[in-house]
Structure formats: C-alpha cells, structure tokens
Length: 316
Length: 296
Image 1: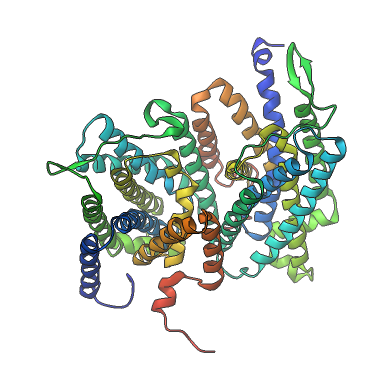
Image 2 (image 1 turned 30 degrees about the vertical axis):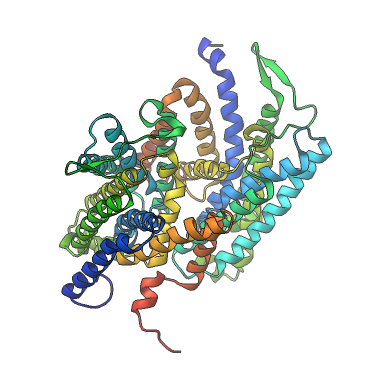
C-alpha cells in the first residue's frame, strides 16, 4: 500500500493538489523561501529514491550520497564543458547515477541488513575520496564552480522562479515514476524480498537480480536529483557525495516512515528546515540538531511519522 | 634485501603502524557487533575523542606524564561512553538493528558537534612523548621512532586481546555469546553484564587508539568519519566477531592505505574498494567470519 488506505484516484488527486500548490508557491512566497522550497524538492526526490531501497526493498543504505553526487558532478561537467541544455544534463546525471550504482551494487547487494549498511557507507566514502582526488574532472576539493545556467526550451533558467518550476516538473515526474514502479508487480516483488527473502527465492524469483535492479533504479533517480541540485546551486563540491548527504537522507526516510515514499518527502522537508534553517539561526549547529532529531525519532517514533499518522492508536 | 623492499620499507613500516592502530580501533567494533548485533556508528567519534584528549592534556610537546595522563583520560572517557552507549542501545534491544545503528549515528552527530564546539574546527598537531620524538636510520632512511613504538605497543595489545579472548573465562564467555546468545542466557549467565563490559572495553580501546594515533594523524573534525570507514572495511574484510579477522583485516588495510598509496597514488581508493569487493565475492562473511554466526 502507498500511504493511507484509499483508492489510487484519491492518491492521484492529493498528489496533483500538492504539485499545484508547490507550483503556485513562487507567486506568493519571498525569493529566499522559494529557494528553500526548491532545495526541499531536490532533497525529497533523493529521499524518495532512498526509500525505494530502505523501505520497499529492505536495504538500509548509508551511502546514497555517492549516486546523488555522481549525478551532480556529471550534470555540472556536461553543462560546463559540453552542452548547456538542461534535459541533456539531467539525462547524463540519471545515467551517471545508475552506472555508479550498478558498479557498487554488484558488490553491495550481496550483503544483507546491517552488513549492507556498512558496505554502502564504505563505498560511499571511497567514491567521495575519488571525487576529491580526481582533479582533472571534478576540480578536487574546490569542486565544479561557475556552472552556467541550464537552458530549457531555448531560454536559460535564470531566477528562483524558473529554477523552481523546472525542478518541480522534473521531481514530480520522477516521483510519479517511482510511485508507479512501487505499485507495479516489480514493486510487490521487492516488498516480498524485504519480508521473506527465502520464500521469494523458493518461489523462483531471482532475488539478486531484483535487488540489483532496485539499487540501480534508486541510484539513477538519486543521480537525477543530483542533476537538479547542480542546476539549482550551479556549484558541486565533494561534500555532496559524502556522509553530509547520506546521513540526512537516511534520517529523512526514517522520520517520514520507511516504505511509503510520501513519508520520505515529509521527512526531507523536516530535515532541510531543521538543518539549514533552525541550525543556521542557532549558530550553525545543524548537525547537533539533526543528531537530536535522530535520537528522538528512534526512541519516540518507531516506524516514523507515516506509521504514527496512518495507524489508529491502540489502547492498553 | 631485494631492491623493492629497500625502496618501500618506509611504506611497509607505516602500514604496520597504521594496521596495528586500526586493529585496536576495530576489535571493539567487531566484538560489539558480533556479541549483540549493535553496529556502533559512534565508534569513530570515540577515536576522535581520544585524539582530542591527547591534544588537550598532552599538547604539542608532551611530557611523559602528560602523555600517560592523556592515555588514562582517554581510557576513562572511552569506557564511560561505552557503558552509556550500551545502556542506550539496550533499551532498543527488541527493535531492528537498523534502529540501534541509527541511534548510535544520532549520538555520534551530537558528540562530533560538541567536540567541535569544545575544541574548535582547526587541525591540531600532537607530539610524541620525549625520547620517542626522534628518528632512527633504517636501511639508510630516517624513520620516526614513535611509529616503531606504535608497532610494538599495537602488537602487544593485539597479543593481549587475543589471549584474553582465547584463553580466559571472560573470553570464553565472549566467544560463547558471539556464537549463541540464547544458549548463554539459558545456562544462567547474565549476558547483560557481559554486554556492558564488552561495550565498555571496546570503546576504551577505540579512545586509546585515538590518543595513540594523535601524533600520527593529528586531530581534526571529520577524522571520525574517515577512521569509522576504515574500521568498517577492516571488520567486513576480517569477519564480524572475530579477533583474528580484525587483526588480519587491519594489517591488510594498513598496507593498502600506505603501500597502495605510494605505488598507485591515484588508484588507492579503487584498491581499497577492490579488496573489499574481492573478499566479499570470494568469502561473503569475511575471511574469518562464521556464516552461521553472522546475523543480518
């Protein structure tokens, strides 16, 4: 089930209303608020792609920033050196995220549970080291800067509103794609693997293939989100690939409640607001606040906000 | 002496020093996981805490007293933190392993931020104690004495940990708990006390490794993530819950980190990943891991 009990039509109607509200937001909000909203959208897409792994397939990844960063670097590099086209950059970002995920996934999906967490963490840090040392392409620790504005349909994406609408259009399309995938037979097979891997194997499913496919799709969508990041902030640094991205992404999924996709979006909004907004106003202790939220969620909200909202509380 | 070893002897020795340091760090991570399925993602912060103890107490030009004091302080703080972590994760014992790992991750974020508030964001250097701050000539190249001392201390600690785990009653209890926890409590042993003890000692070793490593690595924010990843790779390669595996894994990673970097400087990250991938493809539970003892 996706989200609360209800028909697909209700879900689609709610989603359409949310997208419309987000599209109208730049008309009423101040420029800074629009930027924050755009950042939340990018991060929400990343969190949803991670939820496909964590919540739906049962593979807790702590290295998802690697594929996000791979997409961001690929999009930034293409926009800088090859083509200013926005769609081309995103296509390259999607491919780059998928390819890096395919290479890492061949090794990582052999492991299960906490072992998987350790492996993805180690692989993610290794990819970050690579980004820092491969100066010719990634610009080393300075990163890629001076990325020109992407061009969509003949016009450059200049200004917060244009960027916001571009990010919203792409993120909403990708989110719909993830939702369709999660409710397809493929998505149900992934849930089956999460709940009882041995039984799925006995039924004749090629579990390794399914897990690898989920890992590659999640990596590709994370890469797409990275491409959006590069289009928005026009600067890509090695920090994008590391734990600084992977931890908040996993936190967003945990806060929202793994396995619902929409919960991850809510979690992403909470994380960005707490870390960038509240953290900045308290003297830059964003990671302290994130840690505190982490501890509080683990103790107080087992199953995340989605579970707390959608399950009637039992007495006794 | 072959010419190859002649040119790379310094790298090999550096690898040994880092390898033994990594063993002291990783053995606690490995045993805590093997015994109670808790992946302690705060392990890197414990190392960093030990490093800051060394900087705050011993400083850049420490006396022997200062250095010993730093080691003692690291040991005390580390073991207290370990007991605290053990009690914090104990409350979640019935929940998924992911929840316990996330809890330690949250605590690690809080602790890392607290450390940067207390000690600032600068890179600090820590000197070795007097007598160990010079260098000796080995085959014509100068080599820091402190690193030789680390090799000796690390080897001695490794031997001691190995002896305790393999030869004493406490060690037998630890190994029994790794192998079958239900059976240990079924025969009437209070495994909660073993749990607290192992968590405390593992964390103590991590903090002491941080203090010992401070003259080599320095102390800086972000070091916690670097060493946590190295320790995780060590544990994955060696096999969870195995002391011997942690030792072999640590020595292998030590060589990859130094010899690999000097031979193939640009490819070192790939070599680390390649070693990880190779071990996992050939032996999915690590070199010394027991497939039946590894719970997902």
